[in-house]
Image (cartoon, rainbow over all chains, first blue to last red):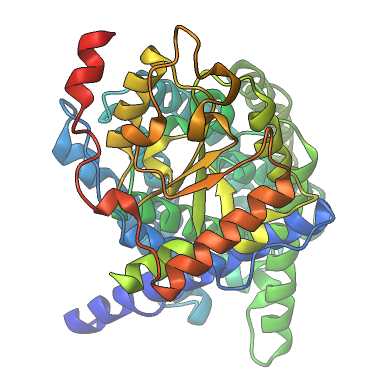
Length: 308
Length: 162
């Protein structure tokens, strides 16, 4: 693997440029479907790109007395982590043998970092509302990471391997009972990982005036928004690889179309849940994830273990 | 700079700054942000933090304490931004002009780009005014007043009298 090729892959395809553009288009889909649910026309097609362009011309305000270095570094951390995660994921999708054993575990860790970056930025802001938002982000992370890892164990048991490439070439777990339960758990955890309603209390707009990102403006805020859009694009692709792997790999156009269709259904489920539920409190969210969701995930793991 | 202003007009984050208002204008602002008028199709969204704001919707009669805080908020808003005064109160004080807590005209210590008269102005009036402002900015006939000089020149004087 040549050094300059990796840098080009990181920056262009399937790294930063591709994932950022795809993520911003996905965020447009989100806003458009939300608008249609509310019986109105939505923003124009290029609106997310207008938003990013506008943020790039605003000045960067830095809070006095906060940790300036950490304040400005946190968005970069999140962006770099989700770019790497997307790169690994798309490398696997394009060539199932291209990655290494254990890349699934690396992916789990990389996809935790954007939420950590929001938390770090919030605590570096020297603002009580931001620290409230940051602490809510941490509590939410503690809540949903446990059932998410349990849900990921199910495809690992089915394919008997922790390499994403093997998950792509084996029978899709979603056609079994354990896989279906694990997919439902993963969808709930994806909703929380993206901090989308009903789990958007870290960034409660009317409650916390912007919460964790209250002090961010200009280009750092643009980086956080791009990171969030990239997560909205990458997490459904990840669930696609985990649970529908065998369906979307293989030659020809049919797997590609199927993959796009399943990805779109996952995104649409996220958006519809977003538009039909209210925001929950942090303790309600923690009780939800450590209660019913973890029980269902544990049941799914046990069913996978016995072969169902 | 005109490219930057053009970028600003395509995606406007609106921040509501109510300075001891009677809340009628605030209700009309909320009405304008409902799905019936659908401002999101123009790229306009509501934000909760001043650091995310591009257009400040100023309403109400600013008494002395609100005036000091409004000046601090305007200092916190990242440039370039626009200030739009909603209703008759920020323009002239209307019926509160001779009351004991009326400080002075907000245009004296805030750089206001547009005034929308009315008590309260209808959402259609608010939208029409924002469209006129955006078109004037795009054609270059107007420039954001926050970029022209220091509007906090008399901040010290305000702080003394509070």
